[in-house]
Image 1 (cartoon, one colour):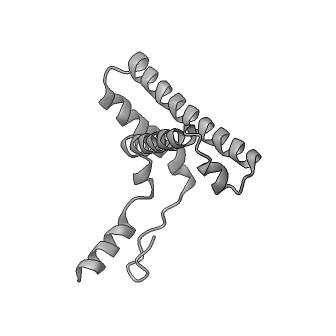
Image 2 (image 1 turned 90 degrees about the vertical axis):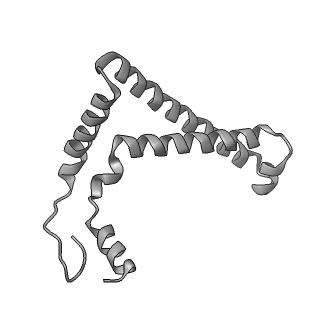
Length: 124
């Protein structure tokens, strides 16, 4: 088996819920928040670039800024809730992560039915 065939086979065998773990979600949330902060910094510079990029449409500029402000507020809210949960309800961060991952699988995992792995099709 070549390297590409091996990696392809492994990719299909990866569980569907692997990307829904606490660590992955928290990392993605952090990335979203950092990107929003960078975009916000560029929007705060009133040099007309955003207005030019949106063909001089002031309403589109306002909607764009509002959308990023809303997204930033939501990510900050999620951070605040998870930090409060960790502080008030759990003895350690590891316990919180374990229970979060277990609950994610229980809540989301029941929506998918895995019949089995088909070696001919290399798919579930």
